[in-house]
Length: 233
Ligand SMILES: NC(=O)c1ccc[n+]([C@@H]2O[C@H](COP(=O)([O-])OP(=O)(O)OC[C@H]3O[C@@H](n4cnc5c(N)ncnc54)[C@H](OP(=O)(O)O)[C@@H]3O)[C@@H](O)[C@H]2O)c1
Image 1 (tube, rainbow, N blue to C red):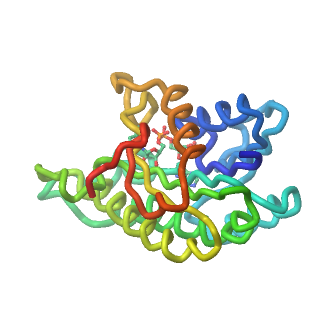
Image 2: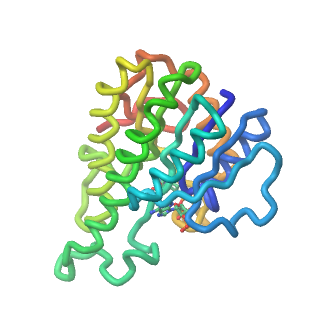
């Protein structure tokens, strides 16, 4: 995998993915909302302004990256928000009785529409890649069959929507030779996962890159865990 684009690569799992890919010799386009996240970018890492909720930002990123490479081998739609993110703190969409829908819409915009927009914009570069993969970081919280309690409406619904987006993309991207999968990255020690999550970001990132390296076109449309095992829908 020579050329990667990772969204939300300023911190958390996205940053760990960027560093792990660099160690493997890749050229990384690190999509960020705030370039100060990489004040002194390492060699082979291009910091790209990319807000997945803003179509003009995606178009600018596409132009910038298109001027620097003619192909992408791996797109990781990593950017995501949850009920604790600054964008949704005012409308948490967690508890029945205080729901107003605004937080849910923000989460769907970032977590499901974002990957849809970004994948569409970069599909032509991916189509020229080597065994190209579009990997969308979903969550076990998006699995309908694993929802056995109430609450957490916004995040769960947004990841369920992403699962469907990833599945539809799998069909539309197959003729271009691009394999689209949704992946639960595990519970990872980031701002979102919290300090008690079992997986270090570095270990989750390595596992996700290992997984991307062994995916085959026949895997398209699957919902997988970071270790490659099948996740229930
Ligand atoms: N951590 C876990 O245990 C866990 C479990 C299941 C799934 N996931 C999924 O894994 C992915 C990464 O999670 P994480 O734990 O690294 O989360 P995180 O620590 O909260 O980081 C989220 C990243 O997404 C970026 N982002 C948010 N909104 C964006 C937007 N509109 N445009 C571009 N970037 C945006 C943030 O950028 P800023 O720095 O600009 O805010 C940040 O870099 C997410 O999709 C998450 O849902 C994580």
